[in-house]
Length: 215
Image 1 (cartoon, rainbow, N blue to C red):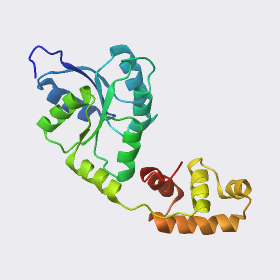
Image 2: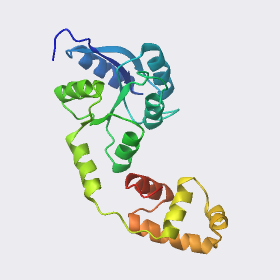
Image 3: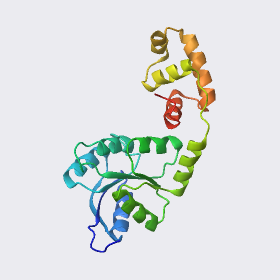
Image 4: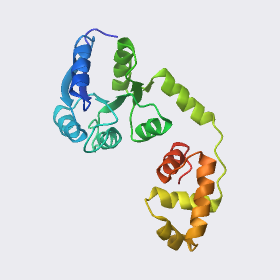
């Protein structure tokens, strides 16, 4: 890497002040990285990103009150105009399949766990600044496992009901929309839960999105 290359401009977003302070101290020692701001909420991150135009936003997923890290990522990466959107590198303790899928689908360039070594974090930041994917080894393993996992076989009716679930519609309205009884909806839901290995509507929607079972 050329020594005269401009440093990567970083905005840190984490709702825990102590964690932010630790990250700022760590990144201050990193070669080729310049922290230009810090945010404790998603809304604050959006405002600072527009003002400071960082190259990379280091983003936690859970941000307390207000919008979460996934929604913040989606808004950051969908900013209009060439060069207007920073790359987002998720840095979190959450490593569930649903969290990983939601963040990547929202536009995150990379996904790291907070257990990473400092040098791996620095390398991931530089990779993200260049638009290259950066994944923690456990995250990469989960992504590959999900790609290799056979998709459950759903009937057309079950897919219709899943699509309605994703819209947040209740059983009665699903029944009306599909011209079936509520009892039939409940029967299909039980079968969907069994096939997807979940117990709740939210879990079914999360797994369906993760495995790309929805239109």
